[in-house]
Image (cartoon, rainbow, N blue to C red):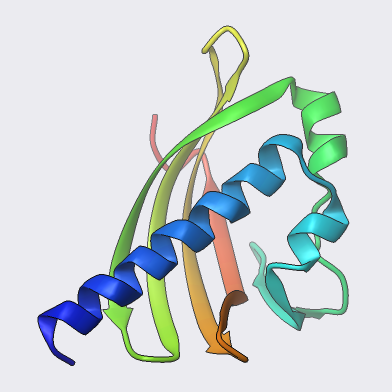
Length: 129
């Protein structure tokens, strides 16, 4: 892959992750499901799960925690034309900027029908102090 193509694919991933984060900030479970390949693989604390629905509801999360916005740093570990492996260091914040929690995650994205979507993900809460 040449540098120009890599730059283009990286921009696509960045745009996708912006939409994914926006779905957490103001979207619904349906908005998130539009950004994943169903079934999606979720790796929990104890097992890998094949889920027919997105396993988390952002509306419930916002209500329960006061979540307002994330701060994330995404690193593309591996990139091909139709597959990407990402690590994401994220912190969830309330509207006043106070920290709710940190979550470090691993995502696998696949590009099908010209659209990137999440195929596999796993996160570790409290990975950073």
